[in-house]
Image (cartoon, rainbow, N blue to C red; front, side):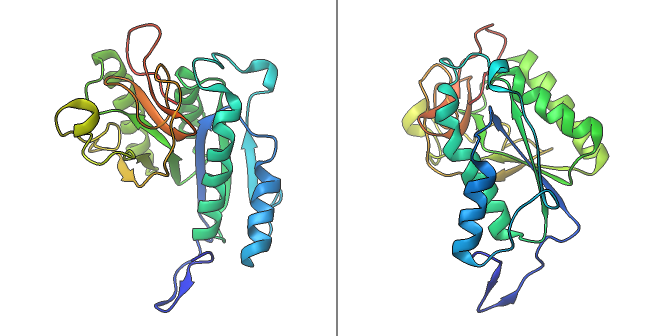
Length: 227
């Protein structure tokens, strides 16, 4: 229930915490959408005191077709902000957008970790299964270890397709949600072109949770791409 209040009492509202959200690109209506949601559910409005963003300009967006276009990511961005604000209305929210769904989102995470800008980081994406390249695994685990050392929690989409047997032919969790240095989070259904998908794509590719975006193969061949 929005506001974290229900028959079991009122849970902590997140005051004193900052939750960062990472996706590719940036919708121009995130804040307006969040305030429409807040008004509908009696939540405090979002403004400069509790919402900030670090995003590329549209001119800086890259790999738009490969990543399912910025418009494919926009509903997810608003959904993520609404979900965090509804669960923890007292927390501050920082939205950080990557300039693409590949290295751009890794840079977004580095920006948060290097500046210690949040206590929790929410990622609505992940890989399809765990068959990722050694190069990608090395880079991802380095980021996770940095976060662990700084006391910052990383939460990744655990996928929209259960045990992935229908997609992979065998059961497997999704990485990075399965990493010992991160935690899984339940996603919302979404998908992207099979080449670069946010939430549910092909083995060894990154996935997120954006419309028609699932996992995306890395064009360089060095590892998963992402949504």
